[in-house]
Amino acid sequence: MQHPIAIIGTGLAGLSAARRLHEAGLPVQLFDKSRGSGGRMSSKRSDCGSLDLGAQYFTARDRHFSTAVQHWQAQGWVAPWLPRLYQARQGQLSPSADSQERWVATPRMSALCRQLLGDLPVQFDCRISEVFRGSQHWQLLDSQGNSHGPFSAVIVATPAPQASSLLSAAPSMAAQAASVVMEPTWAVALCFDEPLDTALDACFVQDQALDWMARNQSKPGRETHHEQWILHASSTWSRAHIDLDKTAVIDLLHGEFAELLGCRIPPATLRLAHRWLYSRPAQAHQWGALAQGELGLYACGDWCLSGRVEGAWLSGQEAARKLLEHRDA
Ligand code: FAD
Ligand code: NAI
Image (cartoon, rainbow, N blue to C red; front, top):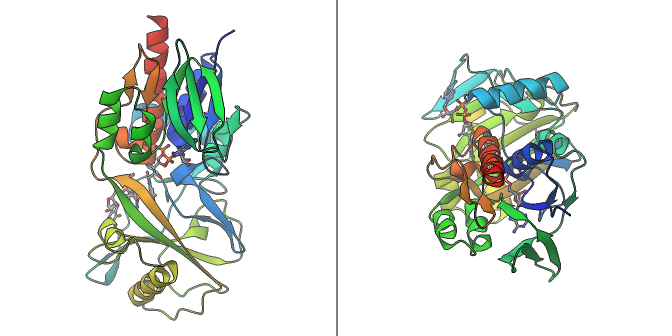
C-alpha cells in the first residue's frame, strides 16, 4: 500500500502542492491548526457578512500562475476587481488609477482555498508539533499528543517561523526557514449601516500608521447591505504596537481612517481587529521550495518566493514538482 504524503498547512501553498500531487495520482493527507482552510487568505464571518482580513487581492505576473487564474476564473472561483483606486501621501488623497489587473476570490477570499481543498482528506484543529522519521516512514505528533502516520513524505507549508521547528529532521532546511524574518500586520474591520460619502474603494497609504484601506463590498460577489471597510497598518506601525490591546488598535486606526477620508463617518456597527504575527517576509527570496528529496522532506510557502499570493501558489507547485521528480528518478 502506498503511504500518503502529509501536508502541514492548508493555505494556498499547501493546497497548491496537494492539488498537483493529487492530480499525479498520489494520496495526500492535509493538516491545519485552524478550523478551516485559507491561512492568510482567510475571511472572517461576522454579523455584517464575510470580511477579508488577510490578503486583499492578488496579481498574476508569472505565466503558470496566470494560466491557473484563468482556469479559476472559468470555474467562477475568482473574478477581477476594479476598485476606484486612490493613494494617500502626507495625508492627502488623490486618485491613482492604473491598468494593473487585480483578482479576488468570490464570494470571499477564503473561497479559493475551499475550492482547491475540495474533498481531499484533511484534519482541522490539529496543530502539528513534531515531525519525525522512523526507520522508513514519517510520523507526525500533534499538540494533543496524538500520533499520525505513517507517511511516505512530508511537506511543511506553514509560515517560516512555524516551519523551522517542524523541519528539525533536516537541520539545513530548518536553519534556512529560521533565517526568514516575517513582519506583523494589524488588520481592522469597520462596518457601517449606511454608505460612506467617499469616492474611493481602495487606497495605498504612505507615511502613516495605515498602509491600506479598502471598501470590502466593492469586490465582486460580496452580497451584503453593509458598508464594510478593511484597514491594514504598516509593518513598522504593527511591530511598534504589537502588544497593544485590540480596542486601542481599533481606536487609533479608526481615527486615522476618518481623518484620511475627511467625510462624515457614522458610528460603526461592528469593529474588530486581528493581529497577523507572520504576515509577510521582510524580503523576497528565490528559493522556490526547500527540499531534501532523499529524506522525503519539503517546505513551501510565500516566504520561499515573493511573499504574495502568487508566490505561495508557485512555491506549492515547486515543492510538488521536486517531490515528483525525486520519486521518478
Ligand atoms: P498561509 O496562508 O499562512 O498558510 C499556512 C497554514 O499553515 C495556515 O492555515 C496555518 O493555520 C497553518 N499552520 C501553521 N502552523 C501549523 C502547525 N504547526 N500545524 C498545522 N497547521 C499549521 N498577498 C497578496 O498577494 N496580495 C495582498 O493583497 C495581500 N495582502 C495581505 C494582507 C495581510 C494582512 C496578510 C497577512 C497577508 C497578505 N498577503 C497578500 C500575503 C498572502 O496572504 C500570503 O502570501 C499567502 O496567503 C500565504 O500563503 P501560504 O500558504 O504560504 O501561508
Ligand atoms: P500591486 O502591484 O497592486 O501593488 C504593489 C505595491 O505597489 C503596492 O503595495 C503599492 O505600494 C504600490 N502600488 C500599486 N499600484 C498602485 C497605485 N495605483 N497607486 C499607488 N501605489 C500603487 O500588487 P502586488 O505586487 O501583487 O502586491 C500585493 C499587495 O499585497 C501589495 O499591496 C502588498 O503591500 C500587499 N501585501 C500585504 C501584506 C501584508 O501583510 N499587509 C503581505 C503581502 C502583500
